[in-house]
Length: 130
Image (cartoon, rainbow, N blue to C red; front, side, top):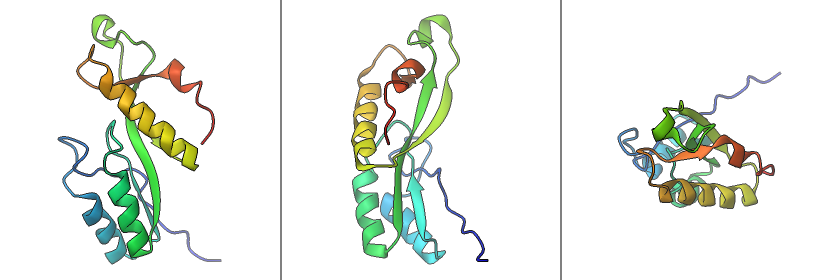
């Protein structure tokens, strides 16, 4: 039986402000140097690096796993009520899920009632595919 391969499913690029340092391209090249077969990109509330990440993965022969790390809460009035905020890594399983991720990223960026972009848990329940 072959040994299971390790895959990073939670990585950040410089599209995760104050949390990531490398470019998507550098991340993929590092994965290639370490002989990884696949790697994920899950920036905080952003899908900005996914295009370059996917493009570089294709050039390097690595399977891209596309995603986003979202801040989630059970209540949209996070700031006013002090509702706890948690992290959730969302990984796209299908092409339609990638589009949904872009929509979610744009949606959380457009909300200005709190200091961090937050997805409301109830809204995620309506998205079941991918």
